[in-house]
Length: 260
Length: 360
Image 1 (cartoon, chains in turn red, cyan):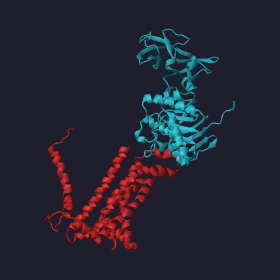
Image 2 (cartoon, one colour):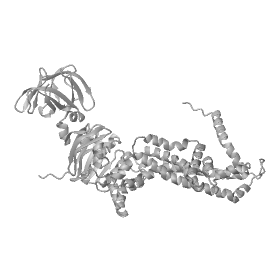
Image 3 (cartoon, one colour):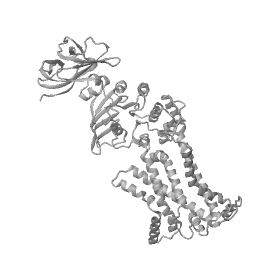
Image 4 (cartoon, chains in turn green, red):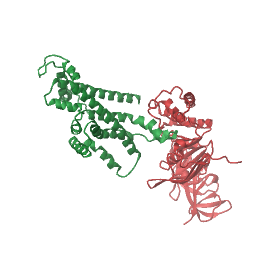
């Protein structure tokens, strides 16, 4: 195939990138604007200072981090155990079960949120961090499950057999061989799940309590009073964290490729 | 002489996968220090046999005995048997040192002792200085050596090797054949070796078990298997064989006249009954031909073609029955051109009876 590396295709790529990132760039630039309103009045870190002094925001950030870390940890346990168990056994309706376990990824969030709301109401579980963690874990598990499962499918069973042959019990072989080999898949699944949990608005909106405001919910409620430069500053910081995570992810995978 | 106790005995092993029979009642016994090769085409059940010995599969029926003790239901980690897997199965997340030390780590061998043993093993397989490399940084031949070192780390009584040279190129393969054989003699460990390469099997083994369709066709020393095949399959799978069928026309003392077609008969040593139908195997290189009959052989045919295949001349001779015989001769030029009518003969002692039965 002929490569069409002309100025036209370059321009096209540039436009696509601009279209994607321009709004984000605007947010970042405005977070450094000295003016509270639209016009540019010079560089300032004022909004960042205000942001860090805003106890409400800081509390919701803490909530969000706690929520994301705990739901990630729980879904790593559940998702990995599920994928490993599924790979080891063969039974009827296995395919069905596998697909059913991925449904939370595809269902509209609003439906999930409603479902959790009525479910927790019926059980009379008080809304708050506990309900948030349960709900977030449910939609995070598939990300781990699908990643680990696809790694396990590609994993040569001879590795575990070799470990057994050399004297390892089934459990020992899992910890010494299977687990290290699926860890990259667990990490990449967990990064995705973490990101999903950190920025979830819809589901959190339905299951949160009065004391467990998350960061996205906080941003959402602040927006009711208009886009303040403080929100811009907050978004910029969140962007920094997300890009950092992506950077770490790529670094890890390229190191792994080099080691191969 | 008293027979030594077999290190491994298989008794009437049956195994099916999803209703398909893979092993159909195989029995085998191997003496300590022997080099046994399971030779057969792919799908003949040789890998399954090896996995049953290792404990990675459980037979549906039959028993596995190691040193006389039954181990049929014992998990792989409890058997003094180690395996060199087909693709080596080196742990990709561990370097060479850790791979080889792994079985010792499991047995809680002291760190210094394990380190010494790893160095010793690396020198046995001639990979000194490679300890810090990851498996991905090794060539196929080096990986294979690491896999052998790892399997030998705990002094198994029995080493199982599943086509360990299958992934190597021909030259390296030949070299490794010699090294493996030498290693086996030096260590005195019993090897059970799988291959579908007949030359490899003949070259390395003390004993060959020819496998086909889930059973053993013949078990014997390489010379025995090659010179005296007892089944049609064994004759045809190894070397270039001609299978000649005929009916015993008249049986005498210790030999019989076998008619291939009316007017074409040959003498076959052995006790037969008149009217019996038999099949003989004669190696391509053991047959000769001339324009007059010798040894009393009167099997006549016509030379169909000669082809020089490097080192030997391959001649095809068509018998009146339409069957073609393949003959290889060291002489690159034949006295007789294609189309020439000739008589085929061989030393009756080199013909092996591979099938006998009643004539219909």
